[in-house]
Structure formats: C-alpha cells, structure tokens
Image (cartoon, rainbow, N blue to C red):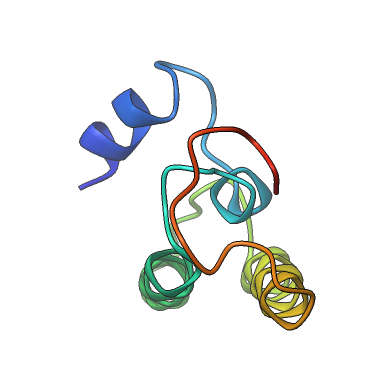
Length: 84
C-alpha cells in the first residue's frame, strides 16, 4: 500500500502524516480513512517494537488539520491545484 502511495506523492520522499493531510490527490474522506489506517498500523507496529518514523500523535495532529479544513470548506473534494 505505501509503495503506491509513495509513488503518487512524488517518489522516494518520506511520507508523513501532514504530507498526507495536505495532499490534493485525496478527498477529505480518503485522507481521513488513510490516516486512520496509518494510525492503526503505527499502533500495531509500536506493540511489536517497530517504528515507522512517526507516532500516533503526529497522525492525530494531521487528522485534526483535515477535520478543520473540512469545517473551513477545504478538502471536501479532490482538487487539481494545491488549495489545501
């Protein structure tokens, strides 16, 4: 899953929760779903003693930003320009 996401987000750069939150290729719903899945993966990895390079708090911050964007009317649809 993350390989195709990495490709869609511009290649080998590090994927971050905020990068996902601000990616204009996803609707707000898709972004929230993806961040929730990522949070579940990070939580499971933490229980196994592995780290993915960010923690659940970073994901929560990204989720809060997406929710705020939706309240402000941004990110409810996929956009072609980086409005968000």
